[in-house]
Image (cartoon, rainbow, N blue to C red; front, side):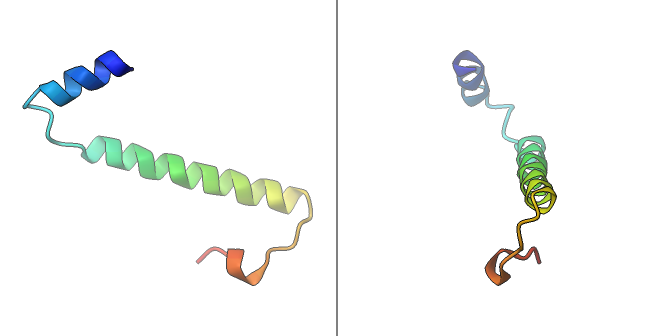
Length: 53
């Protein structure tokens, strides 16, 4: 991965990070979804501060 990062950073044609940003957002949503699913499976109540918007 480090070698890949160096290639990406050193290349001037790789200034579009939109795919990386989209993947990061999708990954974040998957983690949050898994958290909520597990929490609900375990029967844990959702406190007011944790409720999804």
